[in-house]
Length: 205
Image 1 (cartoon, one colour):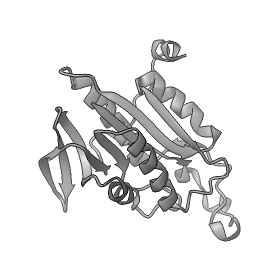
Image 2 (cartoon, rainbow, N blue to C red; image 1 turned 180 degrees about the horizontal axis):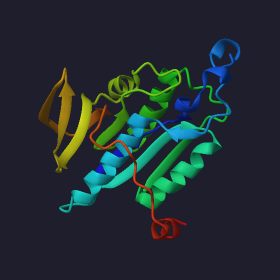
Image 3 (cartoon, helix red, strand yellow; image 1 turned 180 degrees about the vertical axis):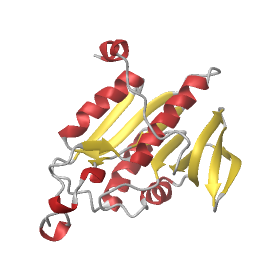
Image 4 (cartoon, one colour; image 1 turned 60 degrees about the horizontal axis):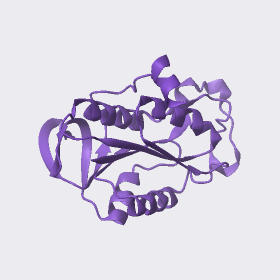
């Protein structure tokens, strides 16, 4: 069983103070001095994938992590390898030119998935900067997988389907979806990614 999670590294905008705001040409606010974090929805998706792997004993679950970004993403990818992600893929974008080009990112991811078929793809609902919440839809359209969301939890998976909880206009619904599919992760019950232990980090090097 193959699961791929897409994530984006972004600046921690919560640390941006009003007095620090400075415009950067036509591309918006200058945020280069802010620390980097994993986009919150993507972080939930990564942890949900790990939890699903941990509780699936009938067959192996192979996890992959996919991102588009510069070298600063390598530290995160190293941490994900330590946590058990078998494949960590970074498409190089050293100058962050894809921040405002979700179509390019979606096409890049779709190309990878077509060459490396996956049973389930998890994407966060949205991410700053320049993402209008369309990435999951774009990827699903390009690879012709059904899209379900916003997902708040993943309960179980078998060889043919995945069982999830979906939040829909204030109500929570349990759904079983045939594979392959794309899951759009929203305000999940798990919002923080676990931290790899020293033993796990040593084993991944």
